[in-house]
Length: 260
Ligand SMILES: [Fe+2]
Image (cartoon, rainbow, N blue to C red; front, side):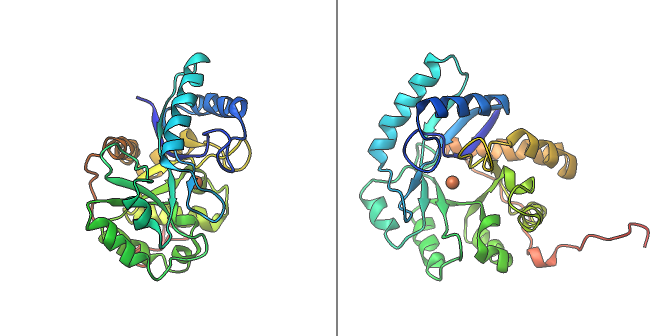
């Protein structure tokens, strides 16, 4: 088993990711080059710009897998959605228009609005968890609400959420602040898996191997192994261990000089 990517916009022609099949196949090869063997396809769903109904994603995923196989690329893809948090989420769940990260409908990749953590988020999380659904918050490190108040993330994990961190965030692609927040989330045991959130060949790329190299260097091989194991558990609908979570504000500050 190679690396598992839980969040990726490679399904062709459905959102702001891969434009067409040739581009998607080229991205698939790039993913394999980064050591990725399995990708959860997560087109945007119910955000301001895109609706990708479950039934369409299922058909398109089967077509894409066939093209991947026909081109001899050793990659397995699964159907999914990046589900935007809106007041209509429960309606979409009742209408069976939601794809989960696993076939048992346990884990839901949930994207918060970019600029905030809405006040109703807590209620919605309660509605989801009380139905046996575990939200996996997509890239909290890029959300301005969590950036302003990172300790909110500890509360959401206490409420039963998991998180997916974006590999390029950890590598400083977005900004130094996003990189540092990603590092803190990991140190507070609030990060559970990496995903690429790849959209194209520039900017938001795969960069998974590089993120795992850094993770192993900074946090050790056990943590790196656990991140990819967690991704496998999520895809399989299995338990993910939540261990000794901390408030980010209570993490020890980095010392400027180790000998003082
Ligand atoms: Fe995304």
